[in-house]
Image (cartoon, rainbow over all chains, first blue to last red; front, side):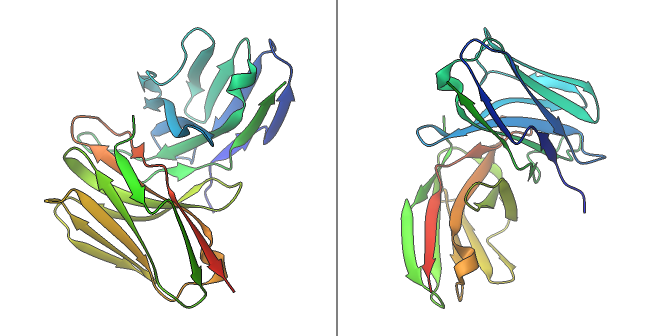
Length: 117
Length: 112
């Protein structure tokens, strides 16, 4: 049963600390998305990759957030330094897209629940 | 910015009843998808309807799409307690590649 996995599932940290979240997309999927969900803002797209290349990170605060795909089996989202307003659930999702295709089904991981004190 | 908006924001029904929620969007779309999120979990894809389709079924789910009105509806028939969740519509805007724009969701509570 192929699933997107995310680690850690929960993270409590203090303001100013670095936070790294990891995602393993479903094997064979070529698009990876990072979302943030809060009660106030709902689900926001932070960044996404296709074939490991970053396509859009316009939703991400550039000064403190960074997203990378070191290889096809790992995507990372890093916050440095973290702030209390970063407290949220961060979801990774993966999908299989075809050249010229548009927005096929996304498969979500269980999320990382981040609390910055 | 959100492309889709669900209506109502919240819905409470008795087990066995049908639940209907709507999604309106603003610009031309390639396809529209519905997802479910149980409390504290990731979103789960329910159904995808393409812009050239008008209706689609999957088990107890029925989705309609009216591109002239820029709206879609999700009907859950014979609801069960396990259907208690938030439901989101998501659209792909023609001018944007691959990414989805999610609405704020409809929270459905099914009472036993």
